[in-house]
Length: 358
Ligand SMILES: [Zn+2]
Image 1: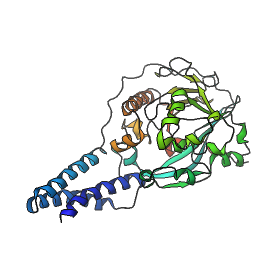
Image 2: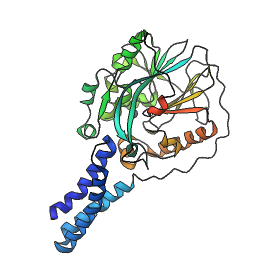
Image 3: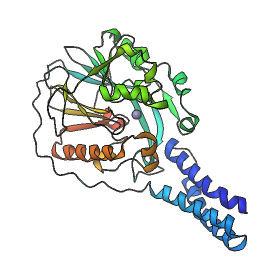
Image 4: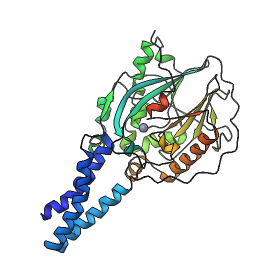
């Protein structure tokens, strides 16, 4: 009885994390019953079997209760309304953007943002986007590459136990199937250097990997989550500067081709050198590839940050992420034509066509 009282809250925590992370088929009803039963059991043990075991079990239950409460919704306060206009852009007529889905991670809304449901399964997109530009085509991130299994083996067990993925066609193979020589890419523009965004870099040998200086430094010091990025030959990492002025309320910017069509701004927090890539399409639409600022679009539309556990695991500077969420939410409110594409939200990518096979 005493042992069960101590183990029960740990089972609740483990089950909750498993359900949120993998969409595991543990019935949520069973979790709810366990979450109610565990404190009751602890109270019984406290009253009948002694203060030490019972007190310890009650304290564990309190900690697990705090963990579960940290998944509840808590909208961030809105930023002041954004009053600027859309910056001018003259995208060339040939500019086009395609989605290259490479697989999914089976997760839930609860994993992605505070207030998300444990039973609300979300297949996180693992994707690249291809920007076709007359001056040189770019990939935004790479999604899952051919070497995924070996890369996952580089991850710690605590990551693998909460990750359940399915792969499809790597970006390099999709480019080849469409008759596009991957070697002709002008560069791979990373939203950040986490493993799941650089997994396919090795399939695109020789293509420069474009990162700001802060992310270049983070690759070396990022621990296991940049272990895959550290397998990129350093000579391929091309560091760019934010030489341009303010852009949509961000302090600095990098206009890749000088035509306002592809503009990168710093959005640190998730990683030190995380960026947002704004793309202006010839038809007037604007895209915002916000990387992992949020994992699902509700992070922006509801201004909900990641739950505490996921912030701890994934974000280096949660306060900076919060500021980024509030600012992008203000931009989204000001510009309904802005399509916000979080790197792991399939609904965002649905706005982009697939690459036609030739
Ligand atoms: Zn990611």
